Length: 335
Image (cartoon, rainbow, N blue to C red):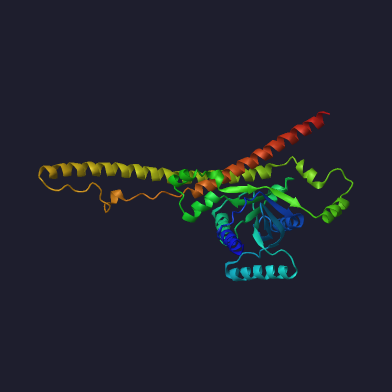
């Protein structure tokens, strides 16, 4: 019986635990208020902060957060010490101090950058599952809580670790630009006591300030800045396409040179065979003609395409809401 128990224990210990996929990010209402307050105070400057909580099954619970100090290359070590001291103080007062990710602000959804991916990879070295909470104060001013939770897809992380974003590898992994980030649903959680207190604080007014914000007819500044950013992204995407056009032109030129060299070598080998001499090899690795042309990485073009799609979705959403408001105002004036 003891040996049987020992064997089962060893089997369990040797079996790698398979983590259930992340289904939802559950955030405490107080943590959301802290994120919004920090991002709005420094808007339009971009800020970041640490997320604290628990990883429970398929739910990632975010129970607390704290802001990072302003970034400064000279005080980078002080910033790391600040984080450690902050987490130490939270542990002493019996507050969750397990890091589950970070949050950051953005301007009109322009967050899909290489820096974000590098930060994800750095967190993944120590944390099995982590998320990034993105908050956009500019969009929230339109009466929408612009809050989303993101993580990198597993297939993309494998490619990024190998630093291989060639067309062949992307086709092999069946990876497209929409597969870089995964958006996780957010669920806001409050204790029963806080929910009762907030219900008691609610006024008798049928509408709130947020309802009035949704009826604002002036969205020109928001649309104009979205269009400006979209035009910049299209210019960047055009430059990336020029890099690939140059690569394919170089590749076709090299292939033509290789064919010409092979025809010349075969003719030479035919003459040597007639003269009774040994033929020369048809491939010469030392020849510059056979040196492979490096293929440019497709990561930048994927990120830019992602960003273009994000801007288009924002413009589409705001334009649709604007038409609804205009039709509503027209009906009110007619009545």
